[in-house]
Length: 343
Ligand code: SF4
Ligand code: ZN
Image (cartoon, rainbow, N blue to C red):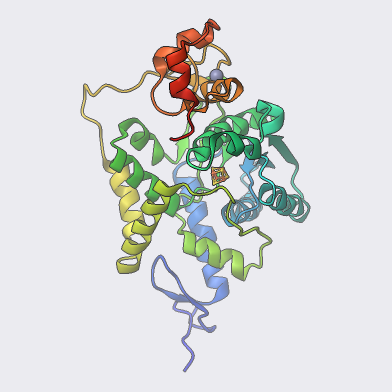
C-alpha cells in the first residue's frame, strides 16, 4: 500500500523528511522547507525592505538552493529585496572554473546580476600557485581567510547592504564542535550567530538564511526541484579537522536526527563567564580590514607567500608583525623557521 503524505493526506509520500521523520509528498516537502527558511528570516529579522542583498554563490548545492529560495520568497512574501549573485574565483583549475560555469547558468536561470572576484586580481595569487608553494596541509587556511575578505571586497564593489551565505545547519553544528574541541571561545561565540553586524569599514554584514536547514534536506530539495548545481569536491580539500567533526556529526545524526539542531542550540546557549579575556577587534595597519593584531591574517598570509615564507601566517608569529610593517629584514634564524613547508 502506498504511504500517503502525512501533511495533505491526498498525494503519495515520496520522501521521509530527515529533520522530522514525516512522510511527505513533493509539494508538501517544498512548502515545509521554504516556509521554514521564511520563518528563520522573519524571526531573526534578517532583511529590511529595499536592501540590496548579495548571495554568495559557488555553484554548489547550498548556494544554489539559497539563490532559488531567496528569489522565490522575495517574490512570494514581497521582501522588497534587490538580489545579486556574488562569486569568488579562487583559481582552482578543474574545480572552480567548472563550478563558476554553473553559477553563470544560474545567473541566466534566476535572472540575477552576477559579480565574480578572483584571488588573482585581489591578491596576485591563485590557489593553484599557493598550493604549489605551501603544499596540501594548510592550503584551506589561506583559502578561507582570502575568501572572507574577497567576498567583502566584491560586496563593496557591488554596493550591497548585506551578504547571505549558504551555510546550513550541518555546517554550523560542525563549526560549533570544532570550536569546542579547540577551546576557541571567541569563534564559538560568533559561529552560531545567524547574522553579523558590520564589524568595521570594509566588512559587510552577513547572514545565514539556511542556518536551520539540514544538509540532507537541501540535497533532497535540489534533487526534486531539479536545480542545476555542481557537486564535485574541491581537488585541494584535505581539510582533515572539519572532516572528522563532520563524520562524528553524521554518526550522531544517524542515531538521533535532532543531534544537528541540538548541537547548534548548545552552541547558542553557551555563555562566556565575565572577565574572560577576549581578543580586541581593531583594524589592520596595512589594509584597514578588521584585525585583532597589527596586521590582519590576510596581509600576513600574503606577506608570507610573497617572501617565500609560507609559515608566517600559520601559527603565532605576532611579534614579527612590527618588523613586517616597517619592512625590516628578518634574521636568518627567523627565515629558516618560516621557510619549511613541513607544517
Ligand atoms: Fe579552498 Fe580548501 Fe575549500 Fe578547496 S577545500 S575551496 S582549497 S577552502
Ligand atoms: Zn590587512
